[in-house]
Length: 461
Image (cartoon, rainbow, N blue to C red):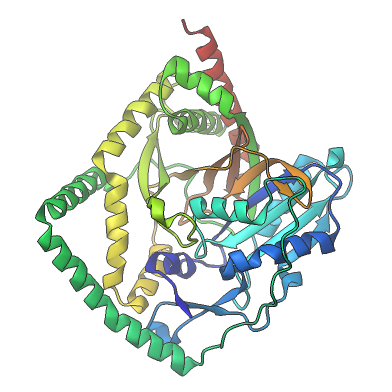
């Protein structure tokens, strides 16, 4: 029995019928698609490395304790590894529509919270693997580690020993869950007391932590000011649209060498150009900035290889009011350097850790209420996850490209995820189905924004 962290539990509690909280994406492979049995065998061979994939969530009675992970006594791989096919011609648009439909559906809480769909019939003899996993299981950086576990780094890897037969652990009763929650809850104050004592014994470190946190809170205080109204915010429906945009890391490096900034700065500048195009197409004002929630990993080097959530966030102002792509990039670069110096993300992580003080029932109720309150201080979400820069394989087929999916939150109707793989830069754009029929305008605008920066870089002395 493994108790869920407060942050992981928050992703579980804020989920609703109109806000599924799973992450995932689509990876496209060279053909032909593997037989179902062969692919299932490959997944089975790796499950011992990711035990969470054979566990279910148990909720403690009346919210008196954090949810726990327990082995699923009825685990059935065939339920999670599914197969479907696109009708001819098997276009990218058809695949994107399928992803939107699958991602609109909540995962079954009575089973391990993940699915994989092997999709046949893409044009060019290709096939795709659609994956979805609940955010309470894994954050973006950890999910990259999972990809490396589930896929091979060679086309024909050395045959591993057959996995040992798996037997689920004991399934706890309600009384055992409650007893574990009471025991675990009693230990929290002791752990906090130990941390406090250690901090007092090291006043220099304590002073540094306090300074970092205070600076971050001061930087975040301005976010209470409400930005201008926009069609990017409003109630969400139960269905999703999804699309993608493409770029290359080589292009980003070309821009960085000539115009400055980081990879993340270049990406945010291109996305800013895409949102500018979208709002102009909608006839809305662009003499403003857009606020984007930017998740930041606070996972320490020693925590690599664990699959729980370790994320904080910063809020970036996307300068859509700037028409010139070079000036837009410079604006983003200056701003992001200031955000890093302000320690806004670190303060967010400290506040998140304070969830350990809150009884799980209050945390659950607070998370649910927060998703139902009018929330217009954030216009969109943007997350950038670096992936492996070498080819990956599934059942002997090379992965050609991979596009990420992230959920929408609160009343944010569009969110952008970025994933880099083997020299490619892939943007996955999630949208509310009822209000983003023009989602492709944003996708095209992101590609155009990056192309404009490359042209400016090529023309720079």
